[in-house]
Structure formats: structure tokens, C-alpha cells
Image 1 (cartoon, one colour):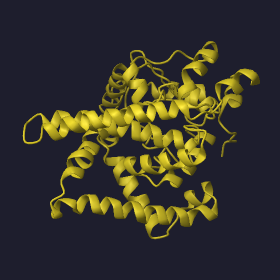
Image 2: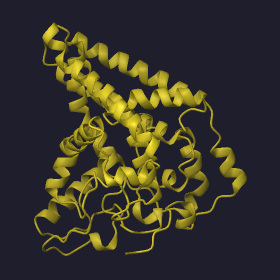
Image 3: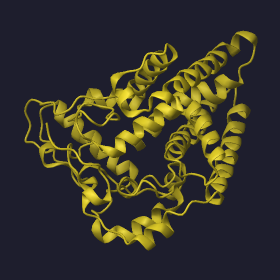
Length: 342
């Protein structure tokens, strides 16, 4: 069994003076409220497009657009509020955590404590509770992950266990005992809400179906392609975030939807830094970090190319994105290094 140390800036050999870090990590409500207002406007506009296009072919691209604007920010905001860094005001942070976790479909405290564990033991086999796929990844695993099937299966399992008051060994390890009944309460409330949404059409209420259910399904692949490239093809069991985690370039729209979490190496180095300050953090430590991988589309295309070639027993060297040395092979049978924990 290897020796584990908490994965962060110190374990990665990255240094930033305390005064600069304190200034960058300062919490305030204003940027989060501005972002939240912009997101609500975005949802209102795309939702209006959906409702206006009902009964036509254009309802499908409208629901896809609305779904992307729903799912990617819901994931990003539930993640940021799970860290407690989105807002300085605690009740506001917790309220947004609850609502966005409902949209994302994970009980909020389960999200918080398993994600804290993910930061403590990033991509460490047997320790990290948020490894969503087997590694090295093959084409079949990519399809299950990118379509949302794998995540939905995991979330349904978690909801079922929590609602029944059954807690896995992993959850008992990462979460305080007194938080477990709260998770059960939240899971039961959320299941009741989901059931009401699914049953609503029976009573003639269709808007949740058009504005949440179908857009949530259509938008999930885009959300999951953002999250997939955070750690795929990188090094397991390393104390260095620089080896286990990927930052990537993206457009202003991607940065907005993803709350700057494309700066993922920087986020793992200093998780106390709020989303709005991640570009400043990236600039402050850029000389100590690897170059971000190319844009969202290029990075995902290269990952797809690698996993497809791996499944065919072909060479797996990516054209430009970073890969751990053992992910690059000349072909042959795939030897599993780690099993998913999600």
C-alpha cells in the first residue's frame, strides 16, 4: 500500500506567498450574485425559446441549448458551493448548493463530503471516492460516461441507499456520523420532488418535462465532457496535482458556464480560491504549471481518439494533450490500472 499525503499545492511543489494568496482567496457575495443573475437570465431566455418552439422541429435544438445552459452551470455551481466559496454569506451558499444539487441530481451533503475526499486524495486508487471510470479508459467506458448513463446509474444508487438509511463504508469514512441522517432526509425530499416532476404530465402539467426533464437529458453529455477531461489520461497515485489534473483553454462562454473551472489544476492546488478569482490565481502561478491543454473541443476530440484506438489495440499517443507515461502504449491488450469508484 503506497504512502498517501493530502494532494494540494504543498504536495505538488507549487508556492505562492501568503499575502498574495490571501488577497486572491478573499470571499465576497458580489461576483457570485452577478453570475447567478446572469445564469437566471440565460435560463429564462433559453426556456422561452423552448416554449415558443413547441410543436415544431426547432424545439429539439432549443431544448439542447436550454439543457446546456441548465446542466453545466448546475454542476459548476453545486461544485463551487460544496466548497463553500461561491458566496461569503453562508446561508446563501447553502441555499444555492441545495437547489443546484437538486438540478444536478446529487444529494448536497454527499456531494460535499465525497468531493472533499476527492481533493484530499486526488486520483489515488483506493482513496479517491470520485473516480468515475475505470482507467485506462476504453471506448465503451467513454460512451457510458459521455452519454450520462454511468453517472445516472451512480446517482440513482446513491439516492436509493441514502433514502433507505443505508450508508456505504466509503461514505462513513468521508462524512461525519451526525451528517448521515441529514443526507437521508435530503434524499427523501429530493426523490419526492423528482417523482412529482415525472408524474406531472398525468395531471396535464407538461412544462417541467419541456424545461427540465428532456433538457437535462440532452445537456448532460456536454456537462460530462467538461468534467471528463479534468483527470482522464493522467497519473494515478501521484502527490502532485500537476501530474493528476488537467487545465484546458476554453471560450468566454465555456468559462461562464463552467465557472472558470477549466483552471482545474489551479483549483486543486488552492481549493479555497473562489471561482471568480481562478484567472488571477492562474496568472500568479503560471510559471510553475504545465501549459493548459488546447480548447474544450480539441481536448475532448483527442481523448476520444485515444480511447477509441486503445479499444482497438492500437497506439495511444495523443497528438497534443498531456498524458501519463503509462497511458501511452504501442497497442495490445488493455491492462486495467484502477476501477471506478462512482
